[in-house]
Length: 347
Ligand SMILES: Cc1cc2nc3c(=O)[nH]c(=O)nc-3n(C[C@H](O)[C@H](O)[C@H](O)COP(=O)(O)O)c2cc1C
Image 1 (cartoon, rainbow, N blue to C red):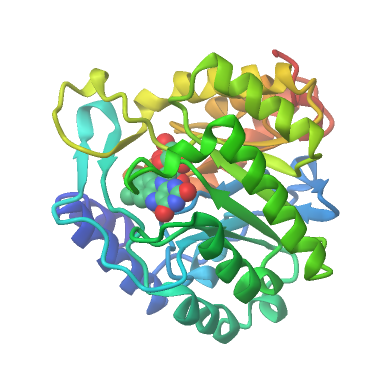
Image 2 (image 1 turned 90 degrees about the vertical axis):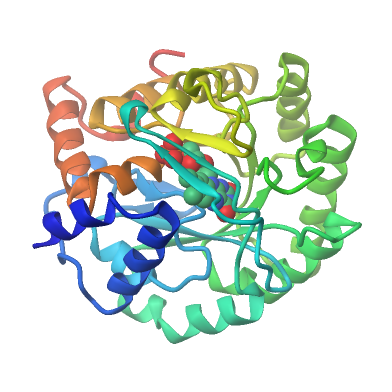
């Protein structure tokens, strides 16, 4: 039944299909998946136990509406958001496009979300920490489109939400918010890192703070970001967001490309950062993961954890179970005793 429902959704307009999926998940219309004996995939990172390295990437559950269903589908962590201080509608529709033959998506959503107040209520109402002590919640935060000073918005959202998550992500890499990626330039990046770390100290918080990076940065920008990350002892990098390079799709659409054609590009960024930081900064690898082999590739290049988005929408509700089971058998076959042993093997 769920497979059939997914096939129908895949033929609808992508944003409508997404909204219907969120509705169905909220109504409990999804398979409850149990995956047992996953010890070989377990790791402790930032003092938190991740049952498996597979999480849901930001942008699917922008308003923290389906935390429990997502975790019930087999993800060990979910990254909520991107959430901004005020609600905002995002860019004009249509703004999500599928490229089925290439297993890609192009989106120009522009941080459409219901804002941090509703987001906070949704997390609190989900009683997540009581129901899912063993799962991890990331909160991905950003600025409203018309904000002049990004740091003011980040401060507002951080102050409001940091107590509700296990880690925070500062999203500096969406291509759909004008000027946002400028903050990856060294002087801006360093300032934001310092200001956010100070804010955390002022709040007497120890929550890990990660930065989500674009795949379209230059080699010099990579070096600068790596140096600043090391000098400021940041907790982690998420590599990567969508790419504005859509040459493989032959399209004039605006927005960022995700899915299969992003795989190699995001892998290169993971390898470069792992090398530039000598493996000292934790990496969450994301971009074009479709099977367990793709996960292992990203981890061997230096990712400690991975996330998926596009393949989840292409493959449907049993996808994470399959990824998890295949990953377990593959690392057993390769003779590893724990998934952590693969990290950085091919860097
Ligand atoms: C429709 C859509 C919406 C997205 N929204 C966000 C977002 O709000 N914040 C964010 O950091 N990344 C967002 N992303 C990027 C994903 O989190 C991920 O980095 C990217 O899609 C690459 O992974 P994938 O190839 O597995 O899809 C979005 C991606 C898609 C396809």
